[in-house]
Amino acid sequence: MSQRTLIQFFHWYLPEGRLWDDTAAAAPGLAEMGVTDVWLPPATKGASGAMSVGYDTYDLFDLGEFDQKGTVPTKYGTRAALETACAALRDHGLRVIHDVVFDHKMGADETERVQVRRANPENRTEIEDEAFDATTHTRFTFPGRAGAHSRFVWDHKCFSGVDRIEDPEEDGVFRLVNQYGDGEWNEEVDDELGNFDFLMGADVEFRNRAVYEELKFWGRWLAEQVPVDGFRLDAAKHIPAWFFLDWVGHCRDSISPDLFVVAEYWHPDRDALATYLERTDHQLSLFDAALVHRFHDAARAGADYDLRTIFDGTLVQSQPDHAVTLVANHDTQPLQALEAPVEDWFKPLAYALILLREGGVPCLFHPDLYGASYADTGNDGQTHDITLAPVACLAKLTQARQRFAHGPQTDLFASATCIGFIRHGTAEAPGCVTILSNGEPASLSAELGPDHAGASFVDWLGHCEGECVADEAGRLEVRCEGGSVSVWVNKAAL
Image: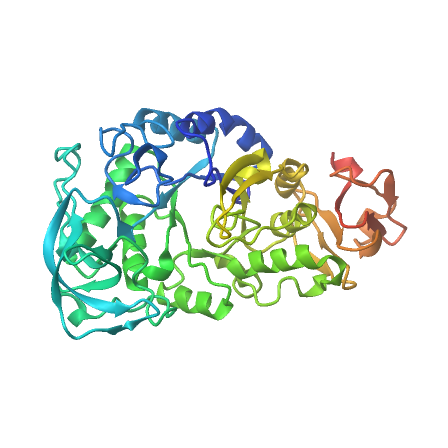
């Protein structure tokens, strides 16, 4: 199969009821473009029913099949439509990557009278010694499913904490009193706020062996229902690393040894990412959050940003085999929690840097291919209308990854405002020369070798007209417009 290219085939503000149908319809075009893996949103029923984007997990075993939370379909469609979409992807040679949301559950069916201890929301390691009685929404019986697929009932013993109690009524962070962890939070989680085990809702207690076995069973069950070629693991900062180390190994043993797994451990510090990879024995990849922030900063700074430093401190620089590189995702898009949008002019440059270089697995974002329009409330309390324009050359860049971005790489980091790189090609596939500028129009000299003497090159993206011809030594002078990118390919290879 072609070198791996992932697409996140959704965003926060998709219209209801259409995504699974749209996925099936898009499969031929995605395959032709050069995409190899399609990351789907959480397919399970969320607490907000037909409005749920999937991260307010209610029932892992309801894929849009049962009348729960006021709806049979999820926001993305029915189970039958999901099955059709997955089959269409596989029919066109595309791998299916499923989003896994294990950290928490929401929308409990019943309340329980339990004991809790208050934790300091700003430092979760500070937990009050005194426990008190309270009512919590922690019992999940899934009456609409009536025991189909799994008879497991979740109760307070399955959770480590909650963010709301009643009688007394209070919001905050509360550690449930149970037999796990001697009253402390899980270890091997991020150390933000002292201990970042707790995120939201009813926080899952992975030290409960019954819970652990149920989640392993769900992984096997899902692969029996729909094609599964990999997983995206949500909220990994809040889930103990030992759990995903075991769970991923179990799924590879039970489903396929070739499962592709990427975890969302969203942290701009490369050392924090390296620690998590060590804890999980390098059994998965991580999104390169540091690189996203580099792109965000570079786009805002324009010609004042030194492009030669664009990869400094990034995961793809230090551990390229475990980096999934991206320009944007559903959390960084405008009006979302980790908002760090990359300005339109810089997106083609950023995508060239993740699609055409050796390191990392690049991930496209749905609105960058198809565009998006939506409105939502910002942090200022005001409603904002957002329009995300598609990146005009993204399809061509993705095609270039499969057709031309092959072989060894030579960096041409010539100046602060102009960098480039050569992919020298292989015996079976041609190479290319990529050049980009965040300032004025620029040029670079690329040493291709005597085998390319006299060869004519053209800009695959069409941003520069005319041809560049290599001299008798195979030296090629390539150019690009200001604030733009060009990909020069041998005309004979077209």
